[in-house]
Amino acid sequence: MSMMDKIKQMLKGRESQTDRAIDKGGDFIDDRTQGKYRGQVDTAQDRLKDEFGRGREQEPPQR
Image 1 (cartoon, rainbow, N blue to C red):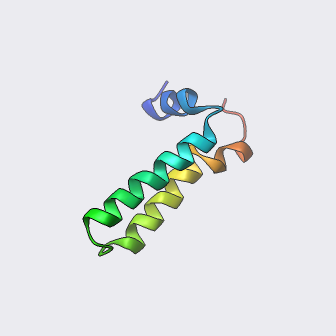
Image 2 (cartoon, rainbow, N blue to C red):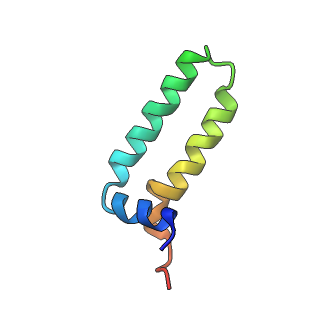
C-alpha cells in the first residue's frame, strides 16, 4: 500500500474537515506571502481538495 493510499484511508469520512484544513492552510500561506502567490495557492488547494477532500466521493473503488 502506497503512502497516498494510507493517507486517503485515514481521511475517509472526514471530507469536510479535510476541506476546512486545506482552506485554512492556504489562507495562512496567502497571509504570510501577502497574497503574492494567491493563484498558485488556489490551484494547489483545488488539487488537494480533489485528491483528499470533496472530490473523493466520486472516486471509483480501488483494485
